[in-house]
Length: 450
Image (cartoon, rainbow, N blue to C red; front, side, top):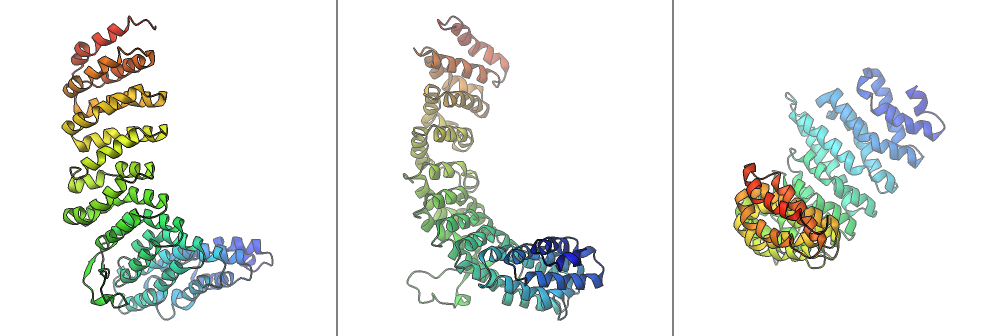
């Protein structure tokens, strides 16, 4: 049936054959595998672009199955990857193919990389690992690098979105990172903002790579050409962090917002000294980004990794203005978003700093014009009580809440009653709630608005 579909006149049948050959390939008997490989090769060279597009989509699945079936023999002189699939991959990645076919180049590179890594890991491979490395470095890696300069922004965007997977697949293969990391840096400088955004979102994942790469050429250095092998080597994270400052000045708000989400995740891979020197300054710049509330909000929501490495002492004075600006933002959804991060920040900032700088802000949210903000503000006080304990709540929250319950607006008094109720459920021991909070609630039972 598969053979009939692969040779049918109507292209829809041949499209179906692409999946039916690739997925169950490792269950075919060896003689049938040879036949189906030839059919799949014909589909990859089909005259109809839609057939080639689907064949390109399933090429990675075929590569994975062939490596599973033939093991190290797949890259030998007579191996299927060497004789058939490497040339198919090169044809499908060429500029003569339409965009819809070339879009799959990056994902297919991932499949080849994983396959070759598996071949390298096999015992008793003798000289076949040399052949695998030769195939990989000299033929496969240039194909994924070529997508960085592709004329179609969609192809470049796909490469940017898949680049973390590419790096993970090739990480264990010697020499590949010296080519891939500079290619990734080009994606971070792409003319299209969508491509830069997608590449930036992968920054933290790529920085996890444990390989060493040549240090970037310094400004004014005469070694800006291809002689990277002569430069001192450094970790991937320490090389990429040099690009973070440039991204903080990007014209696109989406790029800066994406950077704000992932920048602090570089800290565990840099170490404390490099984090303070190279990462903290651009993070502070993002916190002061007055053009975008989303950028500042994303920085605040992702400070956990940075806090684990250096603490937030260095950031606290810059955090405060950003938090207050976001708390007073004209868009209520922005105010709600920053409120949701306050308990997380409270754990990092500490009781004393929070009491002095942010307690009044949390009480102020109980008087917001938007009911969702007032409701969230009451829940905020409950979470803060859980974090800092009953003694802190009695000293720092009950006095200002007592003023709110006397406010002339019944909505504020109602919100105060709700806050008292929520706080009472988490105060330990419960006797404290009975002596400190219950009397206030009973007083509110006599309110004119019932």
